[in-house]
Image (cartoon, rainbow, N blue to C red):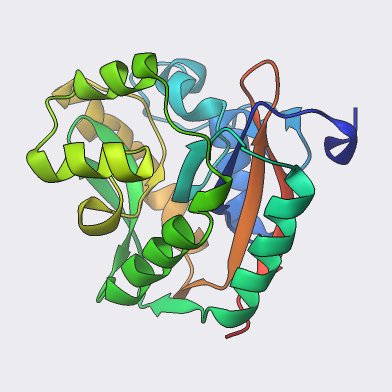
Length: 231
C-alpha cells in the first residue's frame, strides 16, 4: 500500500540522508528502506562478528535517521500536522557542520556530527516546541517505561513536558547503526564498518530538510515527505 494511503499509529520528525550512496548503503545495512517502504538485502561487510541482520535488529524498524522530534501519537489530523510542519520548515534555517564520524555511544554504534552542534540542537528544540500541540500526551505505561532508564531530574522534566526525556538540553543528535553490542563486538563492528562508510560520509554535513515519518501497524517507519528548511 502506498505510504500516502496508509494509516499510521505514530509520527516523527527525523533527518534522513538525501537519495544517494549513503542513503542506499544505510538502508541496506539496516535492512529497511524507509523511503520506499520496503525491506532490502543486507550488504556483505567482511570482518563482522555476527550477521548484519542480528547487529541491526533494534534500529531496523525506524529506518536510517537522526531524531529531531521523537515519535508521537496525534491529537488531531495528519493534514493539520503537515500544514504546521510546512510552515515551520519555511521559517527555520538549515544547520551545517563539518562532517559525520562513526562513534561508539555506550554499547551501540552511530554516526555523529562533528564540530559545533549548537545550531542543530536549536533546530531540534524549535521542532519539538513548534509541533508539540499535535502530540497526544504520553500514557502512564509509556512514562513508566521511560523511567526504567533512571532519568535525571532534567530528563524527568522533559518527559513530563515534552513526552520524551532526551530533548532540549538533553538532546544529542545521532544516526543509529546498531543495537546493543558487547565491548569486543562493538570494536570489531566499528573496524569493519569504518572503511566502508568513510567514502560515503558527507563533508560538510547539512540538515537541510525536516522529514515526516509515519509508523505503520507492523511498527515500521516510512518516510512520508521532505520539507526544505528555507529560513
